[in-house]
Image (cartoon, rainbow, N blue to C red; front, side):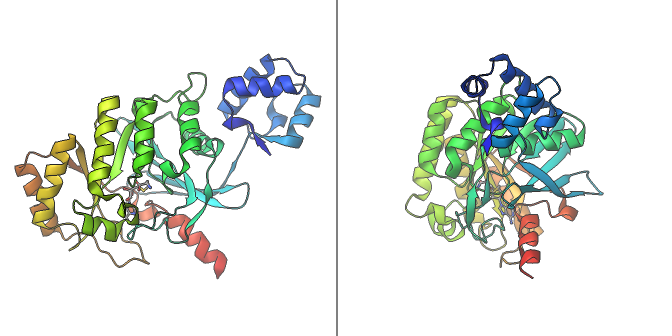
Length: 344
Ligand code: SAH
């Protein structure tokens, strides 16, 4: 099936012209897609014959809601969607005072193998298409009944391992006639695929780059994140520096605090030093416990000592508020549960 939502307006026009249709049909269809039409049947200003013809080869809808859970305490909503091939991905909507942020998945599964993460347990199944990522934003927004103001690509998958479709998604979601979400309101999180970071720097988009650092020394980082092997922190940091130089956008370091693994005073010193060099903002995340994994979140006193060193060194950091704890809102947990249920 041809996914019309993955097309830029000029591609959609060319597609309709190739069917012998006038160009203006593209605008009409684009507008229906942006409103959330799930089939051609709804497109009242499109002639029936064309609707029938399109329905045979093309689609405007890639997701079906499988499950929705809303946190009783903070209103965080987690969606589990079924894709047309039967796979499933997750999207989370978080409500803040300044608006709604949607956290989207970029792949079904992941092949990066981070030792603390639930999304990578079954490996990579496939990349998501731009249309599927757009639908994550669109259908969450329609369900929430308010405007999504920010997007973070921090759900299942490694976005820079799906570079072309993610870039297409970014440009489509940014279109004024589409969802119209500004690049400065979008953050992309990566485990540190340096080639991808350097390529992204050259696109010169105004998105925020978040690096999942999680350890300031190569020994610990490689143990936690196989993607560090063969690259090393020095190379990843160089790529972040070129991103900052090209875009002027400050990098964020994500750092999941893992008890006795990456939370020593010496590691705090090193982290502060790296952040100072790159002018990065540090986002400390209390580790979410994943059943299959051996790691535990840092004990409160270790966390306090770590933060004190960061403060003393003048590092710029925040501790991420944990939302949606009662709805399995962290990466890959719902999809993982479904996989387990299916195999029972
Ligand atoms: N692949 C990308 C984006 C997806 S994960 C990346 O690696 O950045 C989004 C963030 O959640 C990453 O920083 C990831 O390392 C982190 N994460 C994964 N599992 C986690 C867990 N159990 N607890 C806390 N953070 C976790």
